[in-house]
Every structure is written in structure tokens, then in C-alpha cells.
Image 1 (cartoon, rainbow, N blue to C red):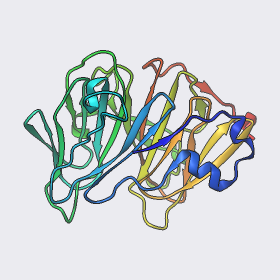
Image 2: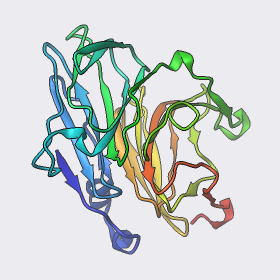
Image 3: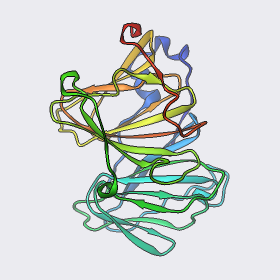
Image 4: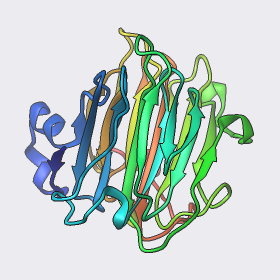
Length: 276
């Protein structure tokens, strides 16, 4: 598990492209047979990929977190973006096809991940944040979610938003997580952009062709910066930063948030004329 420390807007003012990428971009999350995690000091979120092949994988962190097992003081969200697999929780196995998700509550001790086919492994995107209360474990299938349809073709941002870990679906302490699919011909997500000082966020971009790129915009509104991202890469978005992106073709992304609240009506929208 690698660690990323928090940065202020002032700190990144003179960052080079390399420095910006080293601070906020995670380029490789899914390695066959391995667990790859990043611990950001932005709201103490841990995120990354679990890619089992021939055997089961289990997240084991104790010394790094000062606890005896991973979810002793945390909750976990999981979405499978790869081949079919399963999650085994306290000895009970639950199948997980692509786009299936799971909320796993605080104090769940035994969690293991496996793939049905090592040549087409499951890719479990995992996000964990500190938790203060136990909520029930819930499997969340995309088949049971009514998406929120928003955006327009003429503004290149027509998309479907699937809320996985959200008050409309299941309870959590502070984790929120969802799946956004852009319509063919659309390339912008979340435009006009916004900030939310009470919550940080990570984006995982995927289902992209090898030659497709996403230009992820970040920074303060009056001094924006960008990161050029490829398939199955993730970016850390601090609470002070805008977050929006435009791709060279349509793509999919998972957003995950944590912070002071679990509401969506506290966004600070940024007028297009204020972006620089």
C-alpha cells in the first residue's frame, strides 16, 4: 500500500506535470494475482484494486492502520469492473458479475475475493473510509438500480448515474459510491463543474479503448490544471478542487466520496465564466 499525503492549492501552484501526476494520479490499480492499494491522507480514504486469479485474495492491514484487522474501524465499498467472480464474507460466498457492488460494514473480519476464471479475472475496485457505526452488509446489483439520467447530447454530457452506496440504496457512515456511464457521443462528465468543501472524492476511469484518453480537470476554479489519464487509472480529488473530465471517446467512471456529510445539495457550482 502506497501513501499519498495531502496538498494545498498553494502547494501545487508551480507543480510540473510529473509532480502533479505523482501527487494525484494512480496509474496502475489492477495487477493479476495482487492487491494494489493507495492510502490518501485526504479524509483517510484507502482505494485500489483486488485482482484474484488462481487463488483467493484477502486485504490484510493492521500495522499500517493501528488495528488488528482491516475493517475494525472502517467500512468498505466494492464494485466489480472485470470478469465474473465472488466475495466470501464470513464464510458465505456471493457471486459478483461485472457491475455488481457490495457495501461491507465496520467490524466485518473475514473478506476474501476470488475469480471464476483466471484468464478473465474479476477486478474488484475497493474503497474504504473510517467508520463509527456498524451498518448491514448489502449486495448491490446494477440490475436493481434505477439510474438518474442527466445531461444532453448537444452539450456532450448525456449520461446515466447509478447510485450504489447512497442513502437511496443503503446506509453507510460516510462512504458514497456510484457508477456513471456516458452515452455514445458524449464526452464530458459533471460540467459545469463544482467543488464540495465537505467531501473529497476519487474517480476511477475505465471501459476505455487503448487509444482513448480522458483529460481530468482539477485545481481551484481560477487556476485549473489537468491530468491526462488512460484506462483503469484513478485520480484523487481534494475537497478544494474542481473535478470534471472530457474524453476523446465515451467512457465509464466510478466516483467515491467521504467527508462531513452524505448530502448532494451542498455543491458549490462554478460558473463557466469563472474558470481559468
